[in-house]
Length: 72
Image 1 (cartoon, rainbow, N blue to C red):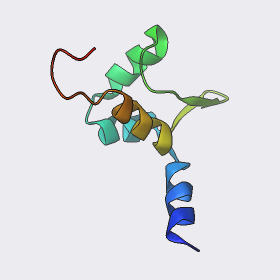
Image 2: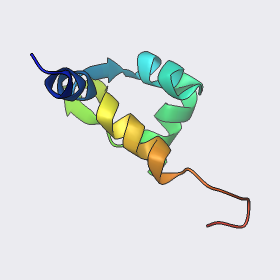
Image 3: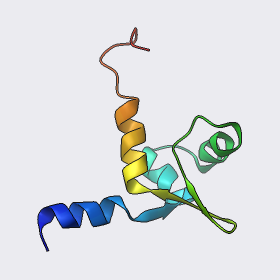
Image 4: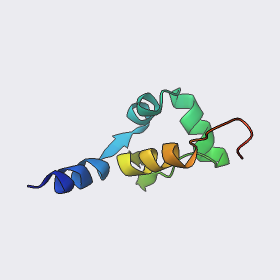
């Protein structure tokens, strides 16, 4: 298996809400609030289970990276 295939497999793995909060260094309740209000990272629902793709969390971080406080 190539390194690129391994990266893709890892990026498409799912984390539960507690694991996603740890990944983002946030509290679980912050992700819960964002899921209700919107504005947080994308998530997937499997029945009642909420899961976050690692790739979606990485994209969420990337989209919010700023060079200074003036950047919107």
